[in-house]
Length: 140
Image 1 (tube, helix red, strand yellow):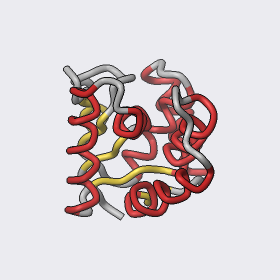
Image 2 (image 1 turned 90 degrees about the vertical axis):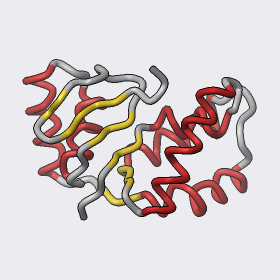
Image 3 (image 1 turned 180 degrees about the vertical axis):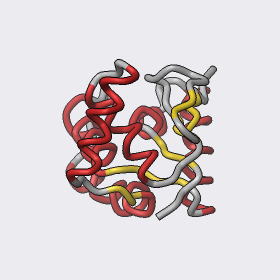
Image 4 (image 1 turned 120 degrees about the vertical axis):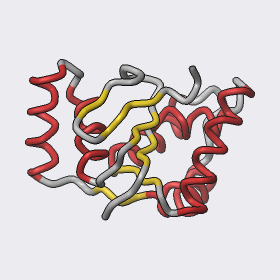
């Protein structure tokens, strides 16, 4: 189940909302490349956070049908990491070692479990290396 890059939720939100054109363009390019090459992935957590945000918290929320179409076209092709006990244990260990919050640690654990070497995220420490994984903020 190896992938090169893991894409955090914030990139999908920027792509969908489009309120920041620069960030939307960068996010769109990363997501399209990930789908096109098959070298990117996401976890169940990213799917859940994305759908919850676009249905309830977005400036202009999507309808359930629009969210389903986005799920089918964008999120499903990238979805590779499902929840399991090992993932939760690794997230707890990462939280203890790196002092990230639990949900951020779960994202990192998912990226590591997928064999990723890059984690695209605006929310984590740019340039931090965790094992073979490097966190990169694409908007810097």
